[in-house]
Length: 359
Ligand code: NAI
Ligand code: MG
Image (spheres, rainbow, N blue to C red):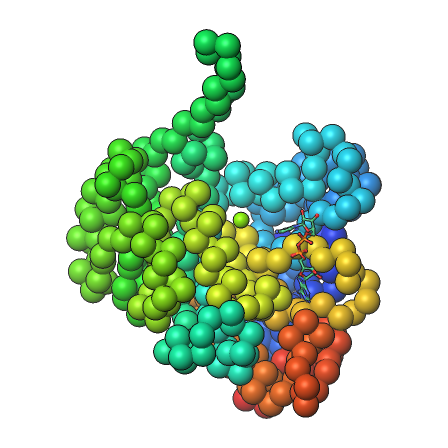
C-alpha cells in the first residue's frame, strides 16, 4: 500500500515525539511492504515565527494533498501574547475545519502493566478499561450563536446550542462503524430529559442504528455517564456524544487511565483522511531534553493505520509491541517506577521498533 502522510511536528516536544512515531511507521512499512512518504508541514507557533501565521496556506494545502495528517502538538508560552487571531491553536482548528473533521475519537485504555497509575480503585481497574469516546467536534453550543447584552440594567449572556439531523447522523455513523472495529456496542449519551437537541440526538441515533443490526445500542444520560465512567468503566465499548458533553467526558475518560503521555486521538470526517495526534500538549517544560514519552504519538500513528488505511493487523502489532515493552519493564520518565528500566524518548522509540522487528 502506498500512502502519503502530512507530518506536522509543531512546537515544544512535538518534533521529538513525531520523530519516534515515524521510526515506527518506517518499520511497519518495511515489514509489511508498504510505502509511506512524508511531507514535513510547518504549522503552529513555529509557523508564526517564520510566516506570521499559525497555518500558512501552503501548510494547509500540504495537509489537503495528503492521505492523512500526523500531528505532534502546537503552542507554548512563547506565543501566549500573540494576537488571538493568529494563535498556535488556530492551526488545529483550521486543519479540522478545512478537512471537515467532525468526529473526535479518543480511546480510554489502560495497559495492565500500568494499572497502578490509575486513580481508580484497583478492583475496578482489574475488570478492564478499554473504550472509545466518539465526540462530535464541530457543532453544538461551542459553535452556536453567542451574545452578551444588557437587559434591565444587568448583563445577560447566552450561548445557543443547536444540532441539525445531518450533523447527528454522520457522527452516529462514525460511532457504529467504530463499534464494528471493536466490540459492537454503542452507548449514546445525551440529556434527553431536558434538552430538545438531545431528544433529536436520540431519535437520529436510533434511526442510524437500524443500519447496524450487528451493533447493540443503548442510551445513557450524561450525568449518569460521568458517574459510570468511574464506577464501572468496563461496561463501555463505544460512547458517542455531542461536542460539550464529549469534551468533558473524554477528559474524564483519559484521566482514569492515569497517563497523559500514552493516549492517542483521531479526528475524522467523511473521507478516510483524518488527523492523528497524542492528547497531550507541547509540554514546554520538558521540550528539547529527549525525555518525553513518545507512546501517545506512536499509538496515534497506529490509529492512522487502522482508521485511515484499514491496516488493522499493523495497528495491532504496534499496540502489542508497546504492551510488551511496558511488560518488560521499560519506562520513560513520566511513568518511571522503582525497579524499572529508564529510557529516553528516542530510546523508547528504538525499543518499540526492536520489539516490532522481533515479533
Ligand atoms: P501539556 O499536555 O503540554 O503538559 C502537561 C504536563 O504533562 C506537563 O508537565 C508536561 O511535561 C507533561 N507531559 C505532556 N505530554 C507529555 C509526554 N508526552 N511525556 C511526558 N510528559 C508529558 O499541557 P499544558 O502544559 O497545559 O500545555 C502546554 C502547551 O501545549 C500550551 O501552549 C497549550 O496550549 C498547548 N496544548 C496543545 C495541544 C495540542 O497541540 N493538541 C493540546 C493541549 C495543550
Ligand atoms: Mg478538553
